[in-house]
Image 1 (cartoon, rainbow over the protein chains, first blue to last red):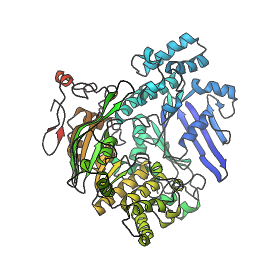
Image 2 (cartoon, rainbow over the protein chains, first blue to last red):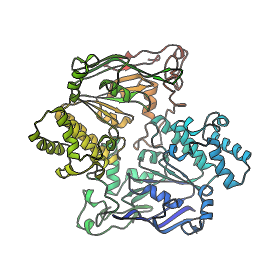
Image 3 (spheres, helix red, strand yellow):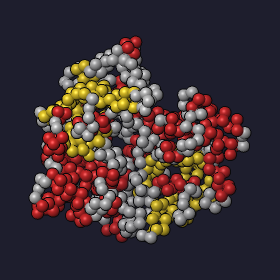
Length: 312
Length: 314
């Protein structure tokens, strides 16, 4: 049973300089109760993918393809229904809780607002539930903290509030966009343990640039480069038998794997290279890579890679 | 080369009831020429303040900073100005370190102009040379910072620093705003430059894995104080302070998977530097806390090979 299925999804932004191909023909499915990691560097389009699923893009964006959830295409449902999907079926935990929380509203009230709206509880019950949620994310003395404002919370505590808010209406899928960004190492470890616990029975799409975090939480991982997926497989296969040169380069550039950089830099999403998008930085590139765009191929059961030279 | 002794900085906070914030409290260390000291700690522990105090960008409350035998804190303004080119700082965010309205070439020329180290007719030659040293192309000279990537801009910052021919470079989280593959490029470049020019680095970071690669010596800070300092290998192989141990185990590494690894999860968060706990500062979060820790503050004690630890249980 898959919780979410994405088929040939394209999100493009027309600009005066050309079309920004932020998400380009992405296909993937997230199974029920699994944590799926979408890993990539700045500007590869991973956040746009999350926003596309939630339909939170600016109106200038053009979206093609399908996002299937509970038997319907989310890209085609009307706005009223979409509003119900957000929060009840799919919740998104955004990066940077400081700007995601309303600074002039008490924390408890912010969580209660969503509960009141989605579950039709009255004000007092919703507040009660909000306090329960704060307790569930291990915020000490939750009934007192519910009456405080976001600025009275530390970064780690604010992230806990964001998680509480995401879980409030018991969605079946959570999209977490860099949930540990900007947190100190000891706090990051606490938040990871928390996420691990609260999402045990839920499906999660974890968007991150940090393979360490992905390794802690994910069952399967997809690597994204310049708007498209280049490899996806189980956690173990990505770490032990990476096939795409980008995945290998990404692993090799980590400080604890020898700090070998990938030469050059990520191409602009407006001006993508011909052929394979990674070829200008790839040491294995041959003529075919410069001319033809590789398709995603399945090399082993469930291990997909977009490279002409994988396993040859 | 650089010797810091009992460096202390208290800030006053609050409008009516002034309270002392102990940002840096009695910090001492020394770095030999051509070596790197990694200063590690979480946000708000005072590591950046240490860097700024050494350069005298802010005035310390107490302590001494000896740079090549010169007591920096006793220098007059004019003398300080003369010595400043020899000490440079590189910051976290390259985009805000460069003037957005200044072309790259002009940015690099500025320090040369201000300090008049090189005659005017040789300047453009020198800029080309510097641009090459940091791995950029001459075509970048006429670009603006917004036309370059974060990694390239950090190279420009390095070129500006090299223009001064410094002895000491204080690097404050120089790669934490960069992607990993680019981070590796910049760190390698910094290591190459150090080898070539014999720079002394104070490398400030929260990332233990990065510090491990860059530093010969590591100092760990918590709430304004050093809790442990030692050779990089000693610290990674036999960290003695519970905070260092927790930091090492909390660092989330792709290499050590979730399987078969015990993580020391610290309770709670770092207390505010206004209300520093009595006794050992770490006792509120320490898994090993004993009665003595609540009353008496531990001193940094040498346990051999320059490895010093501030904990009652050593």
